[in-house]
Length: 297
Image (tube, rainbow, N blue to C red):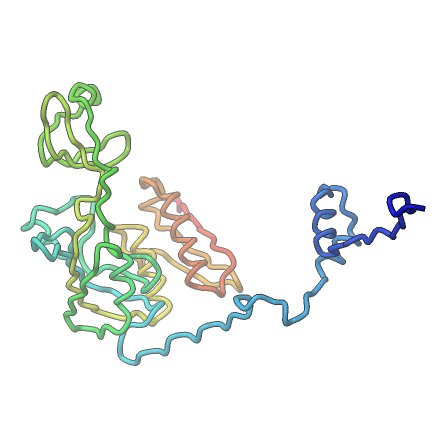
């Protein structure tokens, strides 16, 4: 028999099974509602050998920063005087000093001036300032310089837009170069007017600038009652905190609202804000109850 016509020797077909892959493909075909409880539990409990775990899984928790005695630490309640300026121009854009605000033309009637309550490193002030409050000693005047990245961001060319003059007029805006306006809920500054078109800049006026804050910490609040009063004053502006009577009941804080603000504007928003503050900073409480008592006159 010639070699061409030798019977073909049939060898058994070797099936190459990539078990992990097959499991994955099979799992992908199963809809969530088709998974049986016992099957799901097996998959959840399946563990890989320790040597197969990626290195990034083994992460050690960083040790908390050591407490600095006699100075501000993260999480502290502080009352502080602040004045923010542009490094390049010296322009004051923020201050807790009422007289200085009037002098620099930035006074606002809807704002309460005086030392500001800040919970350190909790986002109550600009990020760059927040990060540098730790370590400041009370009653010392400290300058804190902040880069644009940690202040109002870098300038973004895409935030410059040309808008037809007539469009702005139809929205009740009378364009004047340098004016700060609001367009469809966004704040902007008018940069130029030419050929019937207005260039508006949606960047923050201080975007791209280095700023510096003059900081003086008047007090680090440690007493729990003082902390609560400070939170009350923050939410109910212009009302004496001592008029709010608070009482602890197991895991509940009861706060009696003074009758003079029963019908105050935005009182429900203020109450909710105070409740969230109490639950966040007084971790022993799980509930806040507000009480309104009306007495017979």
